[in-house]
Length: 106
Length: 340
Image (cartoon, rainbow over all chains, first blue to last red; front, top):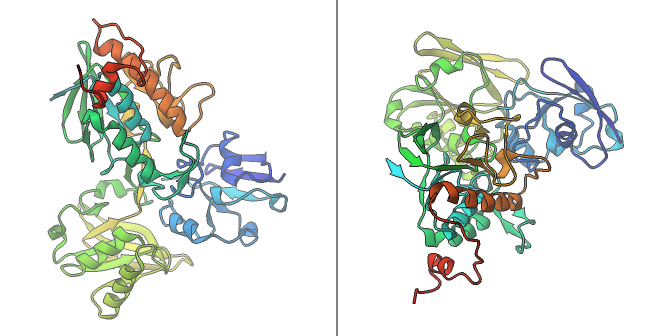
């Protein structure tokens, strides 16, 4: 079960153990960590679970599928290290993952 | 002005089934939805994605579910007011007065809010100060293309709307299409046409770029765009169009005096009434201990809210619980049995 660090846009940091198999989005929503809306509930259909993945981690994550890349077109203020957190699944190898939330989700 | 028993806000699956539950107990409903089509999230977000947890339907899609629900409420000949958002709600004697974005007025003793996560609205540009140019240079839809004739227009986005309007407006305007990556997600064919127009010098395409700033006083003079690696370019333009799809916003619901908890409305689980008598909330927008955001839960919530609406819509009648299998009056309402 990896520990994931979620950093709100204002800098407030939450370190959360997220059970393997849950998405990074679910890890935040189920623990009331603000900044991730996840309006569609995790079906890669709304781009409101947008996060910036820490530079050290971005390359280590499994690659985006085209559906995620398409949805990211709609995310608020995308950057090079943008991901949709509903598409990243927690596993032991992600222990220490750091994600930052954008100013808003839309 | 339209008088009805219940105004239903939201034409998603839960709103549609509420219409059914109202219909079989003899209440008339009108439905308002900000989308241009019926079905809510099921249609807008995931029309093709299979749903596996509708009771007795092992698998269906958002689209087929919507179609079936529409079939189920057909006997009630419900009016849908699409492309319209409920703006204001105020009390008028025993009734609620509801005003929509098209200034339509409804008078009803009951309102059922089945608004999901809120109404679908265009996603906006992520830059500060953009609001002052909205509808005065910055647009998120095209109402009349001739407005842009012989003007310089920058179109942002990579989906079908952005591509289609870039192609269409390139015939009458000087268009620059800007997108955050080199690939377009719209129809392949449209992408090819856009690239062809670019070669013929009829359309400029700037990728991978995003908006960086907007310059101007009353009107837009220019914008700057920025690439991922920080390269900034300036484009003089008259108009800016953004096509980034839709996002759900709670919108004016927050101003009706309802209790809110995060982005949801707390309800009494006996009848799904909010803190205001005659205003009910069902589906994803309501919250209570143990709430599950499932379509099937929304169906149950609508059934109970409908019975509660009866009391206010028919204060002098007694509600009698009946089954569709045996009730003659329900079967008459459904048009499956002739009265004898």
